[in-house]
Length: 169
Image 1: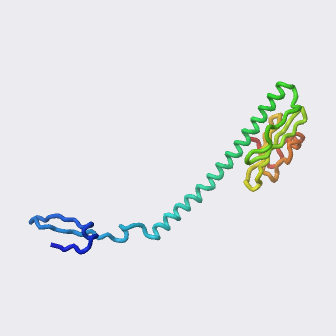
Image 2: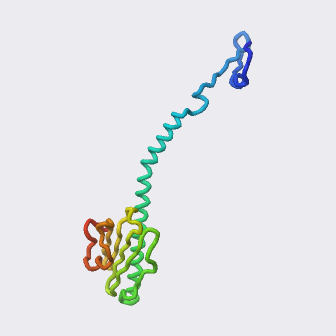
Image 3: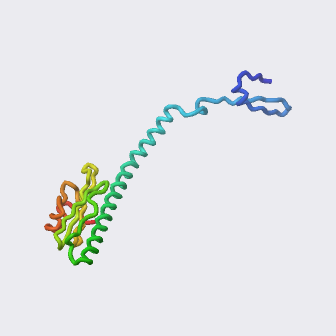
């Protein structure tokens, strides 16, 4: 019969009987691989997580940017609806103004001459990569890079276009 010398041998020992009904004690050795992860394995896992994060982060940031733009476009459409209601009740745009001039990401600039109006939303933080977004009383909707965008709502009214390298939304 085998004599046990360590407590760990007792925990990992397996007792059984052979054909002649003799007690057989077998030992299971716990090696390094069974005790936990090695430093190399942990580093590989961290590298994999970093790669996944580097792929996912730009996509997440693009989605956040898109949501900011869509929220601003929605705000501009609400302004247009409010202006149309104003004109329907007064037959002029005279006196129409904005209840607010800024939100978290954009400043809103209104040009109103009584016959027509334009609102230009300019990003507060130019480095955020957000475009200038505009809308007019005659339905022109513009989105343009800050560097090439029309810089005032009055220019939107006079030019009747969004400027170079811009698009409609």
